[in-house]
Length: 128
Image (cartoon, rainbow, N blue to C red; front, side):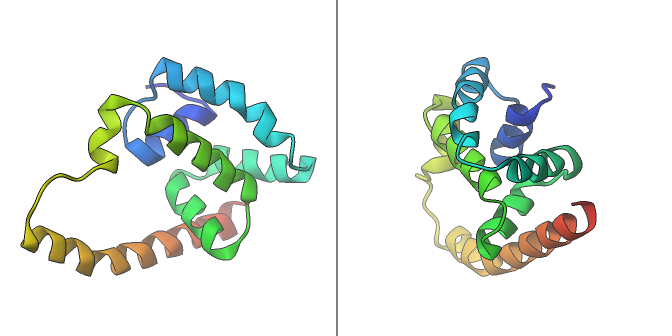
């Protein structure tokens, strides 16, 4: 299992280890993304990466509250890079049909969203 910023973000989004090419491209783009932020933003971002295990929940909460813009930008970059990988096709495109499955997903999404927000909110408040 790979460690580091890119690997943690990729694993939190795609639930698998990061391919070498995605890691390399993420690391190449990170300095440009970080250049638009202050040292305080970078310090807070590093604490989030190091201390929080569910980065997806922290990012979701950050989007809702409008905080931690660097975390949001880094997730956006990783999603752009990840969606170009053929093995992630099924994550972005759903070709399965089924009314029952669709209804189940639509009824559980609000509960999952509240759970993720609460988990991220508490993690950011307690650990950062």
